[in-house]
Image 1 (cartoon, rainbow, N blue to C red):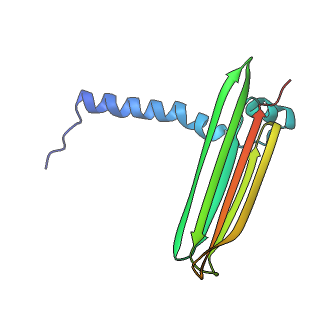
Image 2: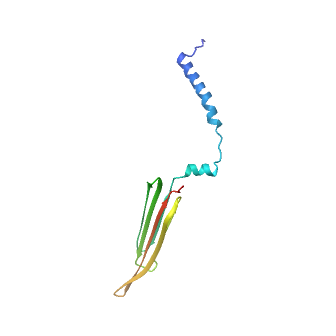
Image 3: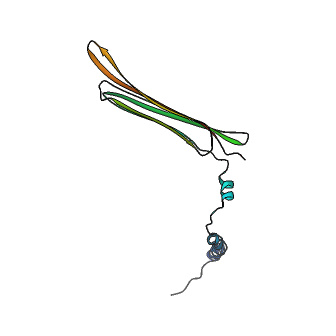
Length: 152
């Protein structure tokens, strides 16, 4: 059985692969993980901002309605990021004494907090009509946050 020799194209391809592997392998394995110092870490993370405004609503009863929404906006003003977050939630349940709602709101940010406000309230009531009493409960929660990226 005769042995065949690889063609020029196969030899060039194998040589190029070997050279590429020889030059790139040391660069890939030479980089050791390192722990950043506090000033290095500040230099990497400075300027970013996260704005989180959340609201939660839950309702239970014969008739129950719960909804929530949230919005967040971030913009750059004078080379600093400014973030605004707003969230609100409402819940309504009715028609029996055991009807109930739960509402909650919260805010958080990674930047300097300029203004933060959260509120939650519930109200229980009853409506009487010709001797029949219908109970209801209503809840509302809101959250508002203004934050900016850390300054110099």
